[in-house]
Image (cartoon, rainbow, N blue to C red; front, side, top):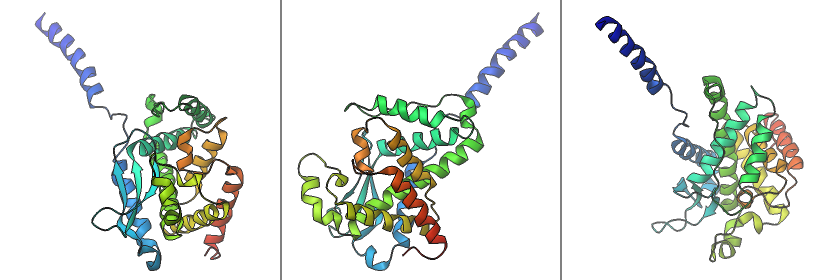
Length: 262
């Protein structure tokens, strides 16, 4: 009887222990990854562009809203500017990158995820991206792809905001951006200023071995949204033709590897 009782207890304990020890469904240290990407982007810039940017290019703060924007330098050195990245933005990029990675094993997942996200973030309520809960969405293969897409999304979006500093866009529009409620710089840029920043950012990203496929997925996601939520303005201008932009990025990448992107 004692042996039967012990066996029954063991049968209960083993599944419980196995469940507790299984890998949790969480993303890695994305904050550290973003800081590293910012540092790499800074290091590969032309020295003349580095002069206006803090070597610690990224400033992160806790904020639910997904925000990425060029900001002035801190109090210690106001001449060296940075890029502000909220943890809400990192969380959003993680989820979108994950949805794109899952699409490789379940076609159509990415488009449906994007439509759900657009619907859920259509108001001014905090962005709360839907989670991926199935174990098959957290395999090593899927998560390796997720990390790659995340790095490319973060790399290009950070690089674009760095470009706004060394291209002079931030200095030109800072008073309008920082007066009261934070205004996305993309609301203020002329088309030529936006295009120049994109080209410079693409070169910067490719110099860091960050391809354009990830950010093209991000632009594709925004383009699929029936109505673009407000947070998308921190990434692209409201009037940006994103299909054309993705074709341009493909051309830039091809030119880069043939020595023609300068």
